[in-house]
Image 1: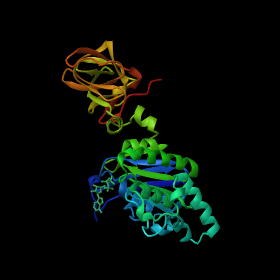
Image 2: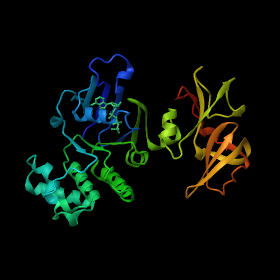
Image 3: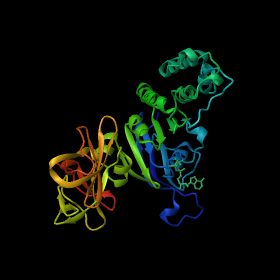
Length: 357
Ligand SMILES: Nc1ncnc2c1ncn2[C@@H]1O[C@H](COP(=O)(O)OP(=O)(O)OP(=O)(O)O)[C@@H](O)[C@H]1O
């Protein structure tokens, strides 16, 4: 297990990059603690695989350094980095038994047979595959194959890090949540540093203690799932995380106050910075239908099970609110109250209101 540091990492696939747009990764600095569970989250093309390949050693960064426990590994090839990887598609030997598949990474490194046996049985128990150990891998369902693939990633206890690259891609939707929580449970048992790459917010937020959100080659926020939900430092994070995402509303700022369609909107705290495009950010969960608040007209109501999503118009600005009470009717005139300590201001995308004290 290792602490991992990425220092001033940049990468371009071009031979002679000249502008920031030429870089697939732009200046990444990160410090990950030994034994932590981390996720890299972002839409397709944001640079997740590039970063993962740099950490595993498949790709040499154009600039910067990778350190494992303060040792610079930037120039080391993958086989000398002592990493285990679990990929999108199961990597197992169909002709071998489940037992031999799990034992393979250990036998390969000359681990004594009794230790191999003990560790294989331990991992099989954690994954709940003990009864499959004697079966041939070829006959397994895709989700069981991926479980074994994960087991192969976890079986060695001497790795610096286990990296998961979209590991639930091939899993049936109704089994995904099972494997997702299994993985979290496994991390708590084995306490190896783990990095989980995904574009799926649910997977990232359920697995990781800390999530790194990426957009267009940059890290836009690093935080716990709660921090990302409650106080996104960028509108991209606000919108990308949550279902529905944060409302990002056009705002005029004058005399230190924010106005939406001419109505004053009290913010969490003082406004900092100057000029730029200003927007109010408030999550649908923090807007209530109330006697007081901003006048709005209901455009649509969607019943999504435990709650309803109200889509309304304030002037010509569309806004979403979530309610667990009985929702208003389409076309109804309502008032929407924003919870002040959850109402933030963004300037050119970045958080520019001070936190409530
Ligand atoms: N081998 C390559 N040569 C040139 N450009 C590349 C190469 N691999 C990736 N890129 C570019 O680098 C950027 C980041 O891609 P990357 O694959 O790291 O993103 P990602 O977040 O992993 O996306 P996905 O989830 O689709 O794999 C993209 O603009 C992509 O087109």
